[in-house]
Length: 74
Image (cartoon, rainbow, N blue to C red):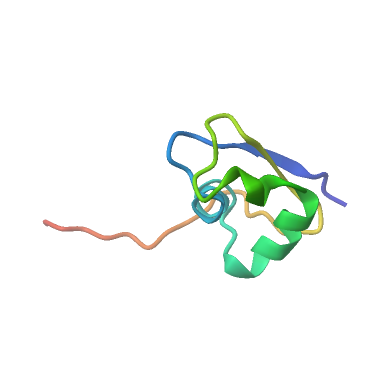
């Protein structure tokens, strides 16, 4: 069983953006993360810099988060 993972907020991070960027998680994963981090919602929509977010062990975190490649020029 994998251990819980911790993420650290950067400047301007929202919880959903942090989870997507660093863990590859989406909106369906927010309730479990909010439950694992009581009081984090009171921090407001933009997390303070350095806020530690615990991602529960039950979440499947991919080794690398992938996004579709977009090329503006060839």
